[in-house]
Image (tube, rainbow, N blue to C red; front, side, top):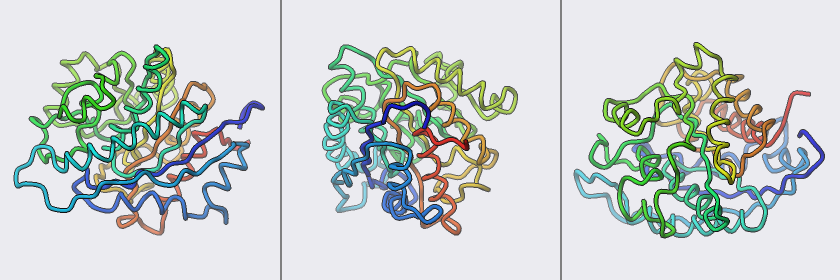
Length: 314
């Protein structure tokens, strides 16, 4: 870790997987906690970085008791709302206490609850929060444009203020995120509706696709993303979908798309973020042990957490 100041880190799990079409991401939380890298558990590595660490366990999940209605445009909405009504104050409380949340997911729908908690904390301080979103997908569909009704494809729209009112209005205000404070990195699988949405919101310059990364390099794109998210007065959160990485390096996810970031590019992105400072919350999502090969995705997820917290090669 760079510098002498200790980070106060609170580890928290949100094992919610029903926002996705593929089951298994709910198992990623405990898989990351239990995985050993060079013989040591994740929390041991975090402590070795010089962090003051508290593991708060897992947020209580309201689980579905029945399948959603056929053709539902917002699958498991009630259960998700109930879960996030627990998650929002939990994340806000961590920040209120001066600690940084490190959140283990779960599918990417959890970002609705986690960033709502972050935004709520900073709103109380009279500040805005920025967001850097690493993902192969835009996650900016709405109930009207989603081909599946799976809410893990909608979180960015919801945080920007469009979608089911029960989720848009969590914590009593909307939107949680102003478009000018959003940066999206790694996109390579956007449908026509998402491309239109990006253009309508004037967000093209906030999206750093894999094509942009190919042309300019990961370092330049991430530095621009940091500059955008850092415009927010309160700093920024980082949410990292493991499918941003190419399936060669991270096969254990439910929505794989070829042509993603390499192992080293992913680490570089988070090393740059750690060097710059300003990150207030970090989460990693869509790690699916049921689809993994020899645990390499779970281990990579743990390694990425350490890079985000300041681990360097030397």
